[in-house]
Length: 429
Ligand SMILES: O=C(CO)[C@H](O)[C@H](O)COP(=O)(O)O
View 1 (tube, rainbow, N blue to C red):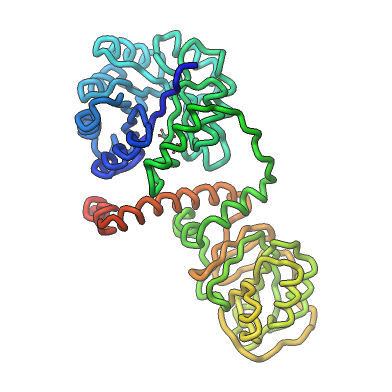
View 2: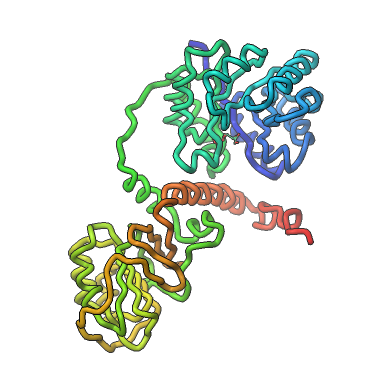
């Protein structure tokens, strides 16, 4: 088997950062350098020219995602120094045919990207027939976030298409290795290399994995276990970032300081400090659930205290979130159990049995339904609609990864303003 090609995808906005990251990736064993679509949109053909000059020994791939004017876009990329130009397989045959003619004229190769193609196998065969050089089994970044898999797409193509197959879409060392074992000859990795604090080490891990490919049995995890794993790895701020600043409860804090609670909500609506329903809900909740209680925002009476916390802890609940007050704070702190509340007050309520369990409630300004996911830490409490929990978990992980690299660049001496090119990207009016 020929050595597979490792292509690093520079999906960044800033050319200086892209050059630095590319250098580290090449040191780790990347063969081809892809000028990612965001970089091309941000910096234009200057990005292709610069990377060509800085990396004379590496193939430069221009991810133009061509949809129209095939000839001129291939010409631009070729004249700027790209050796391979990416076109959308979804483009009309007329666009692909023109791009192929232009590619032959300027001595470059074409890679057709199967992103969003409804019948990938049929289209892959067609574009290969039109003269495209490589087929890219690509699942795009937004598609990955809702659970689509590039490996699944790859499996539909290998051995069926008369062209070398590249694969892209959320690959890491493990999935890259499996992709080569399944027949991919070009492995494209973006996020899991370029967002790493140590890009060289991350590239090396992928290099090593694809040079010794193996099919590893995929871990069987339930959807809820995957969601929990994702949310446990991120912070509440990562989650609100992923939700475009939505989902955060207002005016609620952690009673025990540095604790976290992650889990699906069991909701409780109670009235005027009545503690019957909150305590009944402890027995209804499953281990790992978060009890989310609305007490009409009343801060003068506590429907929750130490004994309830003790009981919740015994039942292995993940935490308590209450739009209202709690008491016995010193005992709760001693238990170190995650309780999030809007106030503390020593007054107890009465067990009257008013209210409801597992209905939609409003908690600190956010609607919470049974089964919505809660991510709470010292920064606050975020509620994630249950139908978007997987997607938001994936997006929050990407936020976390992006911050890892930025943190590393700040550690190396840059300011946050420089790393994020603040002046360039301030919103123009
Ligand atoms: O073309 C792209 C997005 O449209 C990316 O370059 C490609 O998906 C690889 O990046 P990642 O590994 O982060 O998915």
